[in-house]
Picture 1: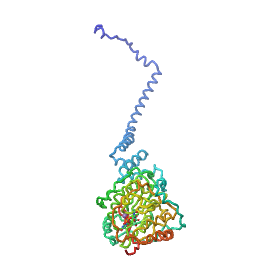
Picture 2: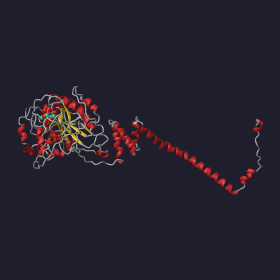
Picture 3: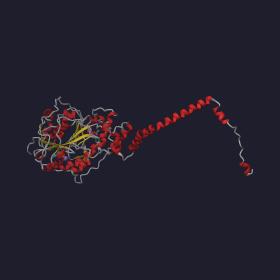
Length: 488
Ligand code: UD2
Ligand code: MN
């Protein structure tokens, strides 16, 4: 086909007025056309009206939501979450979970914990306030341990009052009172003097804040446990200021609570003490992080024997118990030599249903039990168990025997001691000489033979002491105490 032929388009004739005719031919159509026009106008009008409304919604609600999501997703805008939650818009579970995650990632940010506390009450059911004892499996015990669980007849029931006959001279301290002790205590005082501003008046009754109620329970198995801990005393123990900086969440008398869950155990760590300043710093260096990983609500009490008389480890334990329960509602007590450092954090300081001997394996004894009935080093008893045995004896002056007497008390009260498996019960002991004033107690063998007869009238119910000073340092509560020691 030629090009000219292709360009010729057919012309369709239109009759004049035909379209007009079609449009106006029906009154019905006209009516509808009008209606449609009006409707369109109305729709257009409505649409126009929607614009500012939609714009308003977008700029406020939608963008806020988008921003919030971005903020929460972002790993660098903690302040955004803070703002979101602080103004009350962070109330749904997802955001809370995010917030909690954040808070866990940055435990040092007390503001985050504070926010969790503020936001959570409305969304989290309050968990029960009772402390569940850990189920300990006796089958975990070795043969030697089982041997020592032979049944011993319980002693006659004795009424043990929970109060002591202590005389608390003062709740605040002056430097001069503590410097009257030994040279090394003076060094400790340097630390406590630095912390003078944190010294607080010790309340008569435990002041338990209700803040715990809003946190979920911590898990039975703490997630951050690492198992074996590399403990060494080859280096010089860090200065107290460094230890304080390393443990920012420990405060107010060496007290720590897990920030984002409610601890299952409230534990007082009671340390009998005199003139072991470097040991204490090693202890704090290793034990604070370990106890934090164990997610315990714990505080450390260093019970410092004043003066130079004969040392009495057991009586100091009783004082630590009596003083700690004035401060907090502790349910569990770990009686702990200052020179023992735990080497496996799976040995959780949770009081079980039976008194527990924690330091079964000590490097000094080749990580073997020296004898099956040993109950020295580190032990744990619940408040009820400790009251049941009337605490420790107050009458063991000098080295030895007080631990065996406690073993007898437990047995004569109808209880057995238990232990963790030997691969977990591992401690390193700081090497030391025996101090003057802690010479072996020659009466100890005779005393141990009589536990059954003496325990009812020698212990918590006959405890007398005088608090020289009680100071809440950052990493531990120092109780310097006059226990009326005979001269060495
Ligand atoms: C064993 C026991 C210990 C205790 C002692 C006998 C183990 C692992 N250890 O330890 O629990 O029964 O025999 O009394 O089973 N202390 C001071 N300053 C002193 C003297 C003692 O702070 O001047 C404290 C300190 O906490 C020390 C503890 O008392 O760790 C026990 O004294 P030790 O270490 O001299 O006795 P040791 O190692 O023979
Ligand atoms: Mn020792």
